[in-house]
Image (cartoon, rainbow, N blue to C red; front, side, top):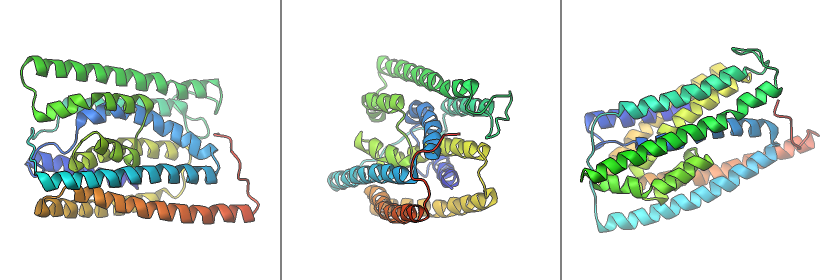
Length: 314
């Protein structure tokens, strides 16, 4: 569902940039490149934890993270609203999608997918025969750590070299200044594998990225990580695939409608902070619903005598 939702957002963002409707790039490909390798590594860790952790712990962690992200997003929205009241800024950029960055992102995704394929499905069937939860299985799984760090290091080096060329060439625009000054924040997020829309949106807003670029960039990264997560769950024997595909299609259509509506509202009222407040509202409602339904599910498991402890990741 998340992959379908993100896909429609990415298509809209790319189309807006190519037609000039978005006033330039809505996706910051530098941020996506630097963060994506460790986001994909986090997907693998998340899948393992989701299988091994008891439901009450997963619910608790999700609520804590969601509450913190909601607070930061609301605070960023208030700050952005005050800034918009003082001045309205327009940004211009190139209209074409950078093929080099897109190619590197695709290569990162394919590398992680290949490692998942080598590891095999829940029966251990893959390109090579690996015993489920055996030495080869965990060596293949842990190899994603150096792969993520290698890609992150390369991208950091390439970004720094590009910024040096721009400065020496005397072409340092406002957007270049924002990208270069926020580089340390990007590095820390990449190295620690912070990702996902719930975390990326508040973080990008905190370092001064505009709401439009924040929303588009976050969806762009989520599309890669969600599609990777979907592949892993499919290989682990996820059931009701047809129902999931149907719901993904529904999410894609409704998400596209929501993006178009909010972009028209921003264009009409000149308030990009509307994006932040909309996101904050959804996050608040999500926190309430996740907490409520989580407590109900945990109570049912307790009354039915089901185990509330940790489970084996295999």
